[in-house]
Amino acid sequence: MIWSKYFQNPIYMEVTRKTLLSEDLRPLIMQYCEITQGMKLLDVGCGTGSFTRYLADGAEGLEITGIDADTVFIQQARVIAENKGVAGKLEFVAGDACELIFPDNCFDAVVSHTFFTSVENPGKALSEMMRVVRPGGMIASITAMSFVNQTWHKGYYSAECTWYEKLIDLEAKVWKMYQAINSIANYTKGIPTSEIPHFFAESGFKNVCLYPIGKAFSLSNAAMPANEKQEYITGMYEAERQKLLSYMELEETGQYFSQDDCDQYLKLLLAKRDYLLRNIGENHIWEWQGGANALVVGKIVK
Ligand SMILES: C[S@@+](CC[C@H](N)C(=O)[O-])C[C@H]1O[C@@H](n2cnc3c(N)ncnc32)[C@H](O)[C@@H]1O
Image 1 (cartoon, rainbow, N blue to C red):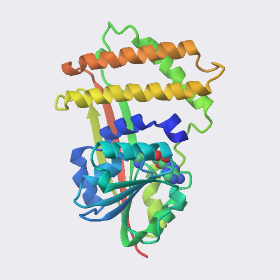
Image 2 (cartoon, helix red, strand yellow):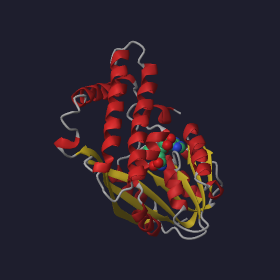
Image 3 (spheres, rainbow, N blue to C red):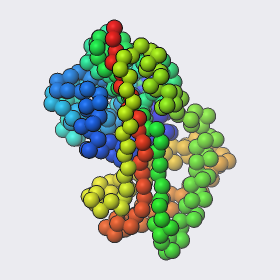
Image 4 (cartoon, helix red, strand yellow):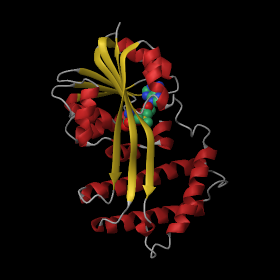
């Protein structure tokens, strides 16, 4: 609940995953994770189920369960799967990765996407994954190594955007408030990505492999359909708006961010959203998202 309310709300989760998990990467991910037709998989820390759905489209007859401790995400994962017509292939359950509710040896593979860097007790979560995967099964983890979100040109916001400087000022204040107000704002509690291969190897995996899988995404990509750009822009706006309002419920005294700041910031976010929406057809929104992801896989021998 806290995760989805204050850190990465369901809208943010869905929008950003679209930039990370592209069609062209899917065959590689399926191959590296050795996922083939008819396998029974578990996706741990599944959030709203973006990665779970992504895998479900990668091979015939997969039976996939997603588990997450945040019940808001799980509810949302069920609704999205239903709306996309894939609910029959997927099951989503609320539960703790460190005390999995499944019997021993019942999955062919256990996967996770940006999970080990988030879970408070990664060692316990990994030992639970090892317990539920069958002997000879695969455990695979994908995590971002580096991620950028950059505007790449001065002209991105033209001179007419007089609101832009104020938006940047307030943005800095918003981030300070997020850090200050919520002592658990640092939600990357797990281990650094670079330690995951060692963590697997020391835990007794065989054939631990580390594959680089990069993904870059640009709003000025002329090949990207306009409706995808629109969805991205409106989604990010809504995600930021909801997150701010959740924090304003905690910011009772206006110590870090006053109600006036909040009203003004929301107006500027809207101005930015509308500017971007007006300009996507021109392909001069030089916004760059992306980075390198690390995919670590290991075979478990019991
Ligand atoms: C960065 S998010 C990744 C979500 C999803 N895999 C994705 O990439 O879209 C990390 C997720 O791990 C979940 N999580 C953290 N600790 C957990 C635990 N002990 N048990 C189950 N889920 C946990 C969070 O609720 C959150 O949804």
